[in-house]
Image (cartoon, rainbow, N blue to C red; front, side):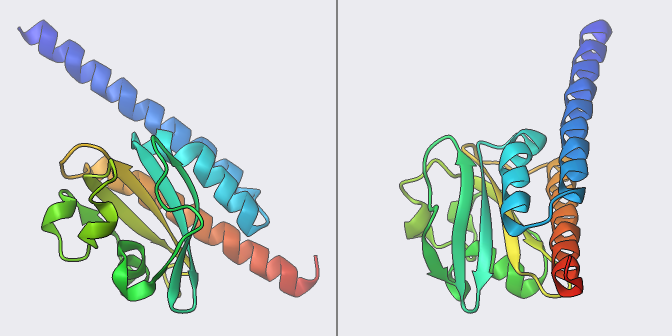
Amino acid sequence: MDRKLASERDSEQKALAARWSIAAEAIEALAGARSLEAVVSVLRAFARRAVGADGITVVLREEDQCHYIAEDAMEPLWTGQRFPIGTCVSGWAMEHHETAVIGDIFDDERVPIEAYRNTFVRSMLMVPIGQIDPIAAVGAYWSELGQPTDNEITLLEALARAASVALENERLSRRAGY
């Protein structure tokens, strides 16, 4: 029994190390991103695998709207759609400057239930991109109920911080005329 438990623990550690390796690769790619499109491309390519989610989305803040600009999910969700910032979880995360951790979408007042009712989404994370003035958010979705793990939260927050730095670098480069 102890050998089986040790083997399971070893497998979990290897899977976690693989996720952090994916996140490190994404952070390196974000360091070279020089446009919003490049940042979104990196997040689409890496975020879902890094956190082990069934879907991810990237949401851009456009004044009082949340614009779902990209996703990588097991089925389509809201790409291209806009929602009032006060009616979606991404808007909540951006307005409150904090990660929304939702273990059960049907048991959280921040979730517009009707928008999610016919989707695969049962639990989620939504992380603002930009700590001082969030201009976007990255979200991860799971088809099963359950609290995202501390590692999943930390991984997505690390990717959001790297995306924030990449977008700030892009803004500074534009200002400097590069």
